[in-house]
Length: 169
Image 1: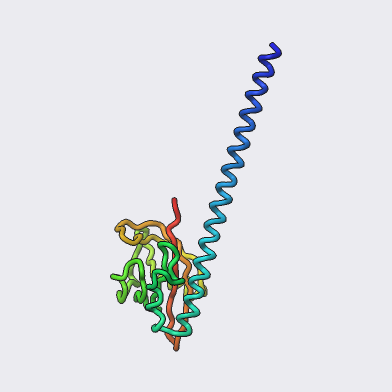
Image 2: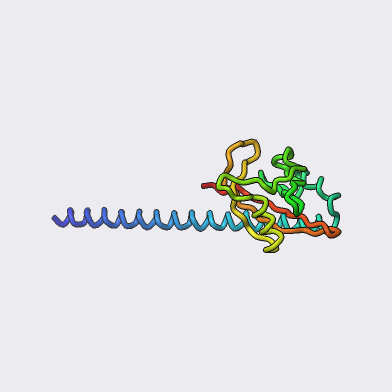
């Protein structure tokens, strides 16, 4: 009888131990994931703010620099995009075919006027994060995207610059 009690106690301790280890593992996973998201956001804000400094110093002459695949304005699959304050795309490394197009009336699958929202955040809030839906390069289906946008001013011309990422769902 005593052996049975010891065995049951050992099984219960083992369950408690495994549950504790699982909870700790999941907590570390969540903490690690949140830290990596914070790092990505910090990196994106830094890159966009550096791009703003370049545009404010050199204006449109600087736009070709955004296309340098080894340059500082591309982070993995993400890149700096740039619009004028009327919603015309001036730089989009991921989809150059939209450059020169007025996208002010573009809606995402939720009905959000994406460029209006981005311009509002960049021009009125002096920089902010915006959630919207956009196609990943090479895809037709829209995916959730988070982007940091802010403004740059060069010789009285106002630009919206941003960079985003597609969070894993």
